[in-house]
Length: 220
Image (tube, rainbow, N blue to C red; front, side):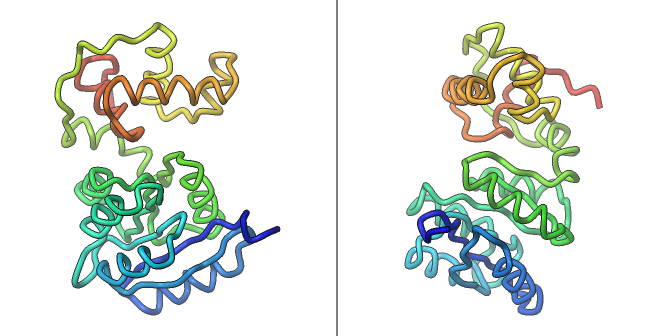
């Protein structure tokens, strides 16, 4: 594999033992190039601007500058970078804060190596990745806490409405394609247009919008 094909990753965590363990894990993963480590949000920003990673895996609670503030600042300067939040807890407010700052992935520190690798590969393709514990909570969390302005004037085709409802029911693009007998590329094209219509940037935005205007009802 050439260097051009490696996913360049930078990690940040203030706990040195955990950070070194994660570094060792990433260094063993094929297709991933670990660019370096940071021990706080300020150091993360400094190293990211210098090294230009494709994907950042960052702890949320760190000294000097936390992961939320660091992510928000980073994406102003490197909008193409993808951020995965890393936390010991599936905490509602932490999830919301990271989503609002622009992160498109969320992993628990208890995640196994195979899931960490899958998350990095997914977000590198601009596809959101939430660990199972987060996915199960996401609809409920955004329904309670994360409100977008009412944009009920947006107009959707019947196909787009079908896709929105399946997204809200936690179907992946591949699963939606199978359900609707479409190609995965077609589903992703519909998803992109849906995001453009409602002015959202992530799956969380679609779910929130659908809940706020009644396209999808949260029955959990």
